[in-house]
Length: 439
Image: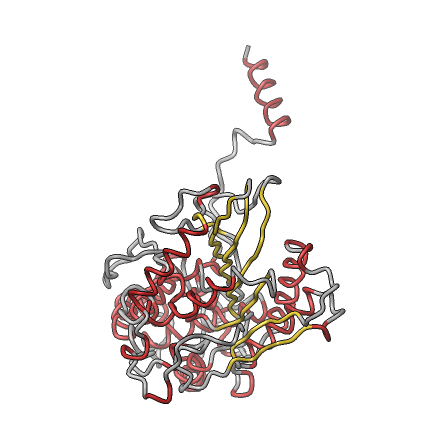
């Protein structure tokens, strides 16, 4: 009888590919928890199907895309990493680390960061942007057959990294051919453009990039205590600070983006990495999330502008490349990833819906998808290929919003948050009634 049972279990394993005697192995993917420094990835916990069946077809898609991987952000380099690199030189002068020490690699480590590499795109960033263009060409192949009488247009904020991302997407989209039949429209990041901008956090004079820093640094002081105790125990003549810990975690993330490996990452546990991720969730909640009353005012004019594009026939696929802030403020204005409570600063809020790693990684994208089924039109929003049902408007097929209700939803929010000029304290020469660069 015993042999028969073993035979049956063996047959089950062969047929279904399941080992009934092996426990499920836990695997933690650290780079999926670096917030805005994460490489692109897709996370679909709800398992809502992003694909449409054959009875439905996409009529138009509007994408908002963050630029691809960069070597290092300017603020992070000049304010966090470079000060640590100076302190690292001091550490090397006074410490003789044991060869078995976790910190031993620091003695020979060479920084890949320098003034001239700030905000430069990495090779992987360029390749991934090109690959995304190929993905778009396959997904929307019927829209990109080149028998056009006008140039295909793509929009980008005026920074080098956003424009380079857009250029690579175009090359992938048209397989490096017909690129001369395209046009990249660069939108100035000048602070006097008011609502007529892809960088409203720069044009709103009331907006402060420092918002959230106080709360995030309170959390940093709390979670770094155990890390400091662990690492400082290996040092005799030098003591790391909480700012050093934060810098080392940033180096781990940026160096991984650059090389797909970093010795700094080995210094940190799973708990340390999740605490690092939570730091940014706290920061962004108060800066470009639900904790900042300005947030919906910053994005509503762009949302109103694209809602008008659905009724135009100039292009079937609109692509706009921006910075990370734009994605967050758009999602918040739509009521998605809704964080109704503030973040505790002495423990991680494990149930928080606002997790920036899910929607702010490099090359993250939001797709506004207009599709039709049986002559009815619907709108779906996808963030990194994950379906996001719109609050109070998800009764359509595939948890979509009926098209007319979506337009009404945007109009309602526009009436509520349209007063950008007053809230942002603009001068009369900075006021624009609408966004016009898609015309």
